[in-house]
Length: 404
Image (cartoon, rainbow, N blue to C red; front, top):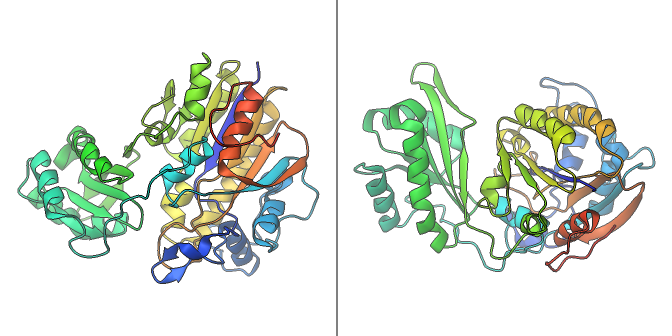
């Protein structure tokens, strides 16, 4: 039976969201944000020379249609992309959910738009309601919490890491996303203790319609600095309806999750999870191309585009990550079986040239290997789920329409 591989390259938007004016980074609307387009322009202009050089080089993704999707989505050509006719099946997808975060994007790609408005913590200090802060401290067994504000994760750990080690209090912070993040030192506080704390806090904030509690463990010393580890764990609110993962699993097929997919879907419809850094996740993807059962779905998320480069507004780093992914993808595609479909997309944008440090509301690429050449044009996120189900010959239960 046919197999499907859905790969989310986290935050790789292509501009042109029709409702971008309704989403903001600080006081600036997301109108005009274009993650791939602006990275390509910066590379062409010599403004992305840290660890790489020259125009953005993505021959594999571009052959599938990446440059064409940027122009379709935004009306703008991405320098260095789109020179030849695509050999893959391609299009651009728009989101309707009232958010630009991980759960909204992934759930809708899996066939379930978010039916509610997310709760966001205000950009004030304190950010959290006093009763929530008190409850987190109680569950942590401490007299209080540190942070209690909007912050960059790496900066707040640098600023409060020493106080955290001295007091034992967890570092709690949020962002423009619907999220509560809790950071703690793996040795001084304990990794298992941090994970248990986040697991216990999650139901409380889920009732508030906060999308995720994220455990952010770190290591290091005051003298040498602190570094976040790959032991991050997301405790996400459960999807409100059955998703593509459930549709496939319900037909007796196997569903493999690579990266944080299991967390995003609260393990609903997931049979097996493989985690690690993006480099390790690529190894897992290669292994599953060889090992995944007939009729299975492999659903992957490569997060470091977003977490390491988008939020940090690192254009060079983002370009390096894209070029790394492109080179690795070139090794994967020839090993697909004749009936396999591999679909590459994204969950939102995170334009590293934009103001602020938040995600950006953008259309996302739909790039497909294994279905010949052609274009599906402008589609919806939910159409991705319907199309994957169509390929697998699994009944679709959501509002999407197959574009295959």
